[in-house]
Length: 307
Image 1 (tube, rainbow, N blue to C red):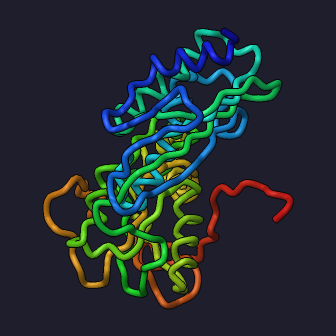
Image 2 (image 1 turned 90 degrees about the vertical axis):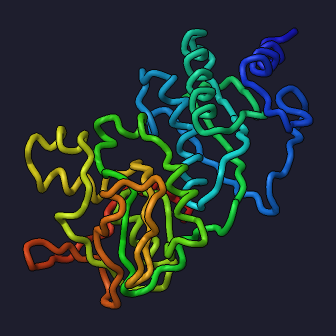
């Protein structure tokens, strides 16, 4: 048996198969059960040198590769079911590093309540690339980026900033929060994953909703401990990280004007407190001590020459 087929056989033993899968790892394609009338699909890669630095513990890389996708499912209000994993492995990757990568993938899938059911493996001369495709289902409505209106309150599910301090490898996908916020009884009008920075993602949500602008309350923005540590006591620098650092993978959502979120559920009290509001006036504005100043929609965007 060749190396590739030996690895495929190993992966079949390594990743548990869901009980409702007719065919999982080991064939040309997986055959699984549809768990509702609508499926939700997303795909995201992690690339060495872009999404993680060389020398990073590959168990953390495996977790991140899965959790990025689970955060996207959470942003739609979906429940994860299955994962497909494509591995582009450097030819000199050590056996112990491959083992840690696989364990990270399995750990995150288990915690997310889903299963790796297939994928592909190739050996390359370039950097490590892990691409995960996630498949989930909706229990009710899908929450989109495009439903916000002037007057809506702006919320986030958790603290922001600190990805440069390592948070991008250790974040938890907000699956329970997304599932709860998508319930028909909640007045949530729009939602998306904060992956490129709060300001840039908020600007994206406003544009998708065809509304002009938003105000952010500087004192209400939750700042991650990692961002505060990197700022070394500089509150302005810590706030800037919370506003523009990418890869927080919290949920950004809007609540209809004059409505309150139902009691109960997985949201923290911090997540229930608005950090701003959608307005008719164009632009993004930071409100602090009774005054306000304009903000640029800063965040992370890949430089794509063909666009």
